[in-house]
Image (cartoon, rainbow, N blue to C red; front, side, top):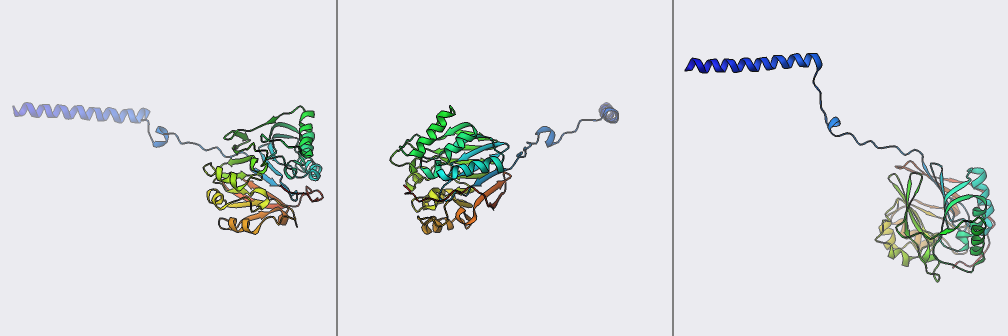
Length: 312
């Protein structure tokens, strides 16, 4: 009985040895496949952004004009006063060699925002023109409508939450109003994301509207301070939600309104010391690779002769 058990054990050992020898032979002849986490779970490749995002806060005195460029796509938010129009067109054409815009935005129909818009419409091909759902009898607004009609363009009234693309940058309409008694408060507000960087363009929005959008996605790196740094905007509650790393203010040198107001600057300084003002620096240019933001200033011939007018 013991011999039979021993014989079975030897037979099993021989079988295992044979399997081992065959395995070694197969390995030396054809090899065995190898596995790693890389073959089981492919790595997710991140594509680098093809070109930088460029944002020009053009020096147009006591007015707004913002140019955004990415990957051959162009967007203009506002276009200064009437006297700035021809200078803006000349700079865009001759210095930056722009011939077409994906988007033109008139944040609201006050002259210091749409004054030069008719000149821009006359001189460039435009895919889409965004304006809020408000009208006014101001001549500068009527001039814009005539320019749009002559080129057989149309106005697009954006919807809150609407998204759009500018090259590799992604835009979102945060707010737009329709209160004809409060044109400033009807301003189109736009958020732009590029890589991990973010920007908020506010027109002349008021503190009342700021409170209405506190629940929106407005935490950004760069804030275009509303209403030229007026005390009527950029409230503490708003800044607490935005938490900007950089603040840009567009206003004119020696303007009659005292913009930017010291109270507004003091509120902003609680969140960032990086405040850039066109009246001091001229045109302010931001360049981003999607991760970093570089800020420089330029001297551009885009500011027409200042004129006095009553700001609403």
